Length: 347
Image (cartoon, rainbow, N blue to C red; front, side):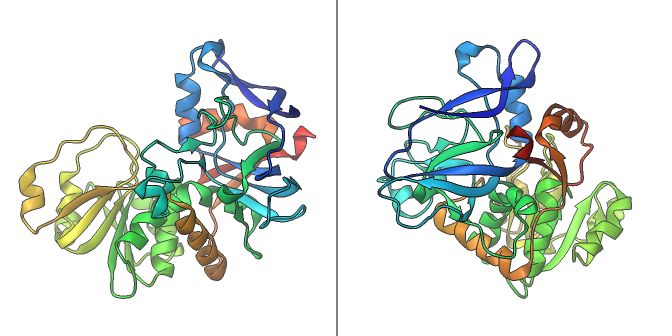
């Protein structure tokens, strides 16, 4: 076994404590990654709150990170020590089901192995995430980090970035498309950047009028205030795609009304139950969809696109020793727009 240092959940306090972690020995198709920067996702906060005891298995969050290859297994052909690398929230899949064969490992019928809180497909061990100084991952589930992307600000692309990229590409957004992004947080600000770079006329829908300047600075043409009935009526049946990144439960009807005929509302932020009046879909042949993460080909394409268009997340970089403070602030929504941890203080 290999050892490294990381931040593990303490179920008695619902906080993370620094500790020594054990990793598997390097397998032939593994690369060892020195984790340099790890994004803090709202999923990490949910996992920490849900973790009740060590009988659940050790919990080390973190599923969007960048780093440097430090060692490779004997069968590795695509990476060498020193290569910049990026890893997202999926680190394995069955590889044989139709979804995996189509390059959509995120929809693996046998369920993908998650970067943390998953079960290793070979030894059954609980996967421990990127809030650590070293991570071992199969070569095929790692990505080369393109030159020119800031390694810290690129880390959230491996979760928030790919989550919004999936519907944008699946629905063929490009020049002439009319896109609205509901919510301007960790997901939303990247959705705006990517939609604008794809050539879409892009709007932001927010309950906060004060975000108008920020929306324009990201490239959006306008901000529509969701609590202003007149403004919402003015954009009725307007958008080919509405990307809904709002994390709290909310009514979908007001957003469906802004979708154009044959358009789509892609619900990304709140993944719980929703209620939809069929008439809100029927009138205009509107569609309701969702997305989450992405397969290996899509993730690689997203990283290349971001490098070509100089797109990264807007982040606040903190030493990993401030991880508990970051999670507390995230719960209060006190972040613009993503926390990233600098893992070098774990040396």
